[in-house]
Length: 318
Ligand code: CP
Image 1 (cartoon, rainbow, N blue to C red):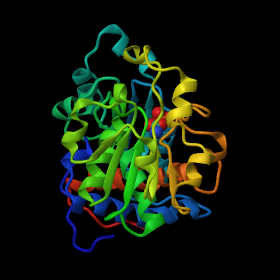
Image 2 (image 1 turned 135 degrees about the vertical axis):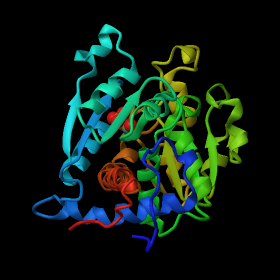
Image 3 (image 1 turned 180 degrees about the vertical axis):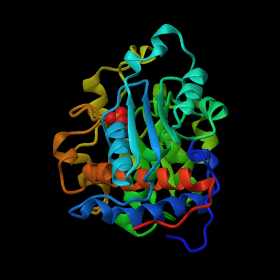
Image 4 (image 1 turned 180 degrees about the horizontal axis):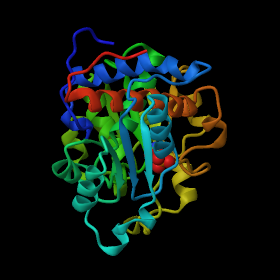
């Protein structure tokens, strides 16, 4: 962990709001927590006596389970709210849900929501920490942190890496968080997708933007393959899935033209045979399951830093 770094943020709402030093500190803290998951007894008492509420208003497999595992590894008590069985269905607002949970002495709220900005809104109404687990098309900060952690583990650094983000950029909170983080840490980012799913604002991020997949993959150290979000109404007119796979799918043939040590990432869930072929997803360049494993350490770090920020307690208790 970085020496003498005082963490001051009680919330993690997005990578946009973090400095490069803060991102590095989260990654360093995660590195110190990673070993806990290799122990026979996978637990430290760092958050004993604290309570986390996991509020997932949208489906999730990886993020929800990863947060719960991270909370339990830190000895934090866990409340998994079933939002389909909550008073949200009776019209309760997010603010009132937050206030009532706070009255039950919740220390940290992990929220995934369909609406961009939901985590920011909740943070205005509760004194406890708020961690954004994905809000609409806005941000998915812990996903970007675990992606950066995985890249740093593979290459030893982020600065100077060429990272190609390929796929449904316009609907992707993962892309936005990765762009913020990778740019802050000095990586070169190229976004690649058919024009229809390349948002107009993409160039404002200071990244290279192209619809030519060969150009995007040239010299890339890593590819982050995004899920095609075909369920979104506004891409119903998109070229067919087979056309997408032919023109943009990450296949063994495409990888042959890349650096031999290229790292293939995907945040999941994957559409095999659409944005990525199975032989690549399961192949030697893939770090997709390592990303999932690293997510535990990264979320332990985020939980620990945000919850202890207010008290200035930055020592890990072993
Ligand atoms: N990467 C990710 O957010 O996956 P889930 O939707 O399963 O949480």
